[in-house]
View 1: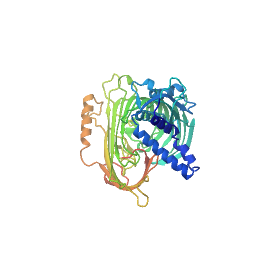
View 2: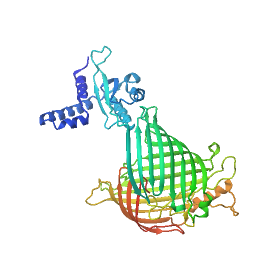
View 3: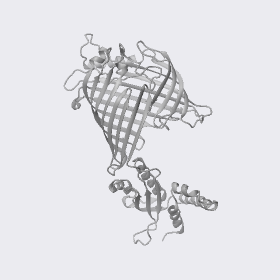
View 4: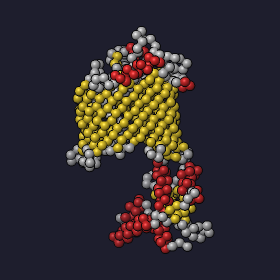
Length: 508
């Protein structure tokens, strides 16, 4: 038979209302009832704090209002809560913690409205098998609508476009999502994509994704238009410590077309069609408090791609790796933050198929550097190798920058608007063919050329600019308007003194 203390705890848990219901009824309560309610809540907290080791048995879990979601899908989430499926008994503290984690997992699927309400109840005492420590868990999870359609326009970084985006949710009752996107713009003339993703084994931290796309982009800095058509498949997972991984395969038909009359010989040499078949891996460890405008924390990221090697086939072969990091350091509670970041990458040519001759990198695969979202103070793709009027990209690069962010007077430090002062710079280099006749390279020549390029990154000062401006962090993207002053400009690179506007989700 249950003790009075146990009955009191369960009665308080039973009568606890969700925040939304309490808010709706609060205006109707008179002062006396409100005071009683506050006292009841305080008593509930005290009882839980005083009885954290109270033995509890979770006998059932019921999810309410999830009418379109498959039962089997939900059972994978909540069945581990049942005491019958555990080797060790619960305490009250452990039970509340496990129920909270299951609720957070349901919320991360993105198919339920927030917040998801939870309450506990004593089972029917007339049931012969019930125990004084038994608890029934009720989770009220109201499903979101089945679709969302958005239209709009975007502008920034020398581009403007109009788009339409549609999202279908919970297609087959297992938190599946289908996203369709289409846009028309000034630089990305057209872009269409269709992506399907689904959780694996009812785990929001483990997803499988299929994506098909087609796009046409004007690359004015290199006198051509790039047309892409292809698809990707990805497995995405997040570890308990917050590390994110993506492992995928992509097959993309690529075309360099629409060459300008004054297109350089380098661009003309890469014109035409080619097919890239590659596997990729992305790793992200993001500990920033707010990624678009961090006040504290750090992020580390690596992206690796292997194309055309062995069974991958395709028309191009290389290994490409890129790494970046950023740290944000606050100055006490003043709202002033110092952010600093580094980036670097390389493209290593490989032999295609049975050939023993490594290929030169193509303009599609080389790095571009310069512009309002990376090395400010330089034109878009203004750094690195040029052939005539064209920025043809490089195989090795390094870039870094630091920004000091200040709250704006009379606006406040808690707003997403900041004043910034910055300095940034970088180097972008191409591999040189040591063969004096300009013929094909062998493996040893590639190694030698890569070593020389990496060593050259340290020679002399990097292309550098400094400036100041305004930063606004919208929930979707970050906007910047800056005045930049180039300090170091290397031969044939294109600097840009004065005002520039940038919009994006990643800034140096």
